[in-house]
Image (cartoon, rainbow over all chains, first blue to last red; front, side, top):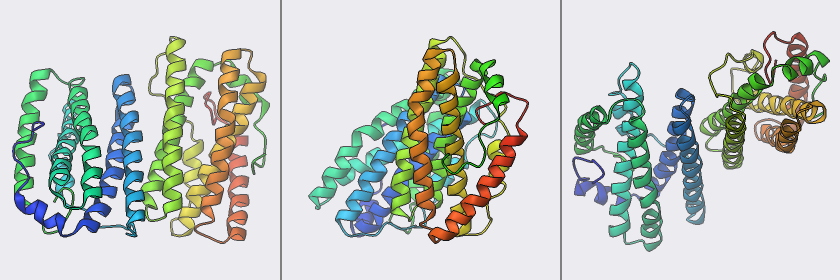
Length: 191
Length: 191
């Protein structure tokens, strides 16, 4: 699915289903961080008009989602708070090339893979959570993650030929699958 | 006006009027940076719901303005490009307290003063530019800068008592006036 090399292990769904409030708080942070990543890419490659326009749109959309999660937390009486993050995104970003133009390609493809994993997991939550409000909520976000994945892959092709981008996406997807298979002890969107 | 201690020197208007394309490119960068500042504040104080909501709105609005300027540049056949920034914002940020909670107060008040100066200068451009399209364009942004100024001052009061915020705003406004009186050689929104 969406270039991912492995589905989420079943233990992930069991783990987060038993810790939904913590998952929701983490999800809010993820939406905020997704907005931050898009803003950083906009700043880094501000002379690429197509990228700038796409990143602006993603910043605005992710901030919109961030507020949807904050509202959901409010309705459920769950206080939004700081939370130790999973190591997933940090481990992926550590793989990014240090030199341009491949650094741009890597940053965009890593963002693409994170969106793909979110998309896959929103699908799992939509299909399996007993809590209908939450299942519908995650289902409603599914489409935008898939769209963002496609946008990031398309933008990577501004910086390198299509074949090179495809090969690198394959490499990074293999690394992403290994990180996901390792898993983590804390219940997070990307644990 | 809006807590500013000195009006812009007349030489500023003369200088930028003779370099409108460069001013517009700088203006685009300023809108982008304003979005970045609001995003950084959102990240830094994410447990303050009122601040988070206000910063999200400002990020979205500033990115909208950024695109208005990009469109204007497009219509005028001016290529958006990187440009050395004025030293104004850097000199102001260097004045920020290093310790919380006064660091939060300072960051918000410095943002408030930058918005105030932009507002004053948009008013000057609206009232004095011979180019009606540009004069109307800047006039259209005037109100939002004034509103952002008020928002930032209000948010500073989340971190310190009103009297302390007022006294610090006074100090920073004096420093801002000195920086503006120095001026700069390059034609910029905040030179």
